[in-house]
Amino acid sequence: ALLIAAGFAVPLLWLVLRNLGGEGVVAALRASGALAPLGRSVLLAGCTAVSTAVVGTAAAWLTMRTDLPAARVWRVLLCLPLVVPSFIGAFTLLAAFARGGLLDRLLPAGVSPGRIVGFWGAFGVLTLLTYPYVLLPVSARLRQLPASLEESARLLGRSGWSVFATVVLPQTSGAILAGSLLVFLYTISDFGAVQLLRYDTLTRAIYASRLDQPTSLAYSLQLGGLAIAVVAAERALLRGPRRIVGPRDSRALRVTLGRWRGAATAGVAGLAVFALVAPVTVLAYWSARGVLQGSSRATAVTTDPASLLGPMLNTARASVLTAVVAVVAVLPLAYWTVRYRSRLAGVANAVVVGGFALPGLVVALALVSFALRGPLLVGSLYQTLPLLVFAYTVHFGAQSLRASQVAVAGVPPRVGDAGRMLGASGVRRFAEIELPLMLPGLLAGGGLVGLSVAKELPATLLLAPAGFQTLATRVWNATEDAFWADASLASLVLIALSGVLTWLLVIRRFDALD
Image 1 (tube, helix red, strand yellow):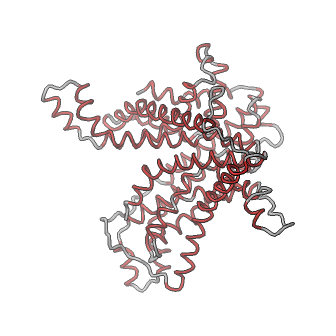
Image 2: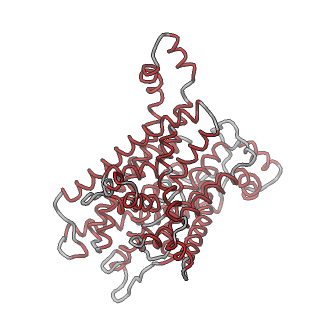
């Protein structure tokens, strides 16, 4: 378990060691404008966190605590933007406003739709795609909240909005804060949306200076420090008194919206349209146009099925391989942290979680530097599949760790004790008794890792072997070459793949709240 934790610490330790005493790094940090990308990252992340807190909380309350029509349907639809990676969301915005695009066709002749780039473009895309990170925990908290609290307030003469402000909001503040901090962390780590929409944050600065190692490492240190500070702040802020949890009550209080019912329905429908229906419509439009025309540069879609089959197989191979490696790697650590609690186990757990806190771009850049300047044998791994899988595992292993810890905790120690009394060896007890009981949780953790790998872009761009193209990099390359239809077709395939996994791992369980 200690060796596994040490492996997860490699990118962060190497990043720190390379920055200590480096004159080029110090000069890069002192250069004029060196802190400007950091300020823009914090500004974008802060604004996005606030907007998603408002949107996600409002959507959760409307679908869980009011008489909104078809609330169960809206609950599912409003979670689906989770399947759209940020770089695809940014691409659909560019494709919608492109010449010959959907908006260009709908507007009168001579009227240009213009373009939405920079801060406002990135802010809009990230808000629409990340509000489910607030919606899901707030909805879960509302489901746990005993209806008696709200009923008591209503009996005291409080209106529905007053009950929300004085009872519901304080009880859900922890979930709102946790979701908002997750959005903040996601936003400062995002690369695809800010790169395509030309907003100069730290991730864009790191990628632009990737060939200048002192500068890129200096920016990476800023971004890594900011990410770790956010995680530390989350742990400190959420270490408060436990909120009230009541028994599951299918007769939870429903607030009557009255004359606001139409406006609330329109608001929820509008959110679903802009966050989900509009992007898919734009992708379908360009895909269909490219398949039907298939001649001009802006609508070129390769008709050879192998052009998408290869990226699909590479995506599946990388996802499955990383999922298996991550589950096998973190299972001993999960055993250690659950069955044998100690301070050292807590440190090892924090190291794995720290790998998830680091942005994928920082993990990849640290491993590039480690492979090129580290020990001789490590250098031979540069741009190979093992190093790419290692980067994926370090970055997403925490997702599997948490699921494995829950799976291990779900197996009572007395089950193993009974096997021992019957004479079964340790290996046999694990293989025939404990592993079958843990398997659903392990598969869920592996599925989350595989879903994240399928959508990962910056680590794949920097570490993938030559000629190894996934669906994410296929979309990226086609977008950079302005092959809108080709990128749209690959995007639809990636969204469909992500949608199936998200439904099985997230939305189906969330829908079971009802």
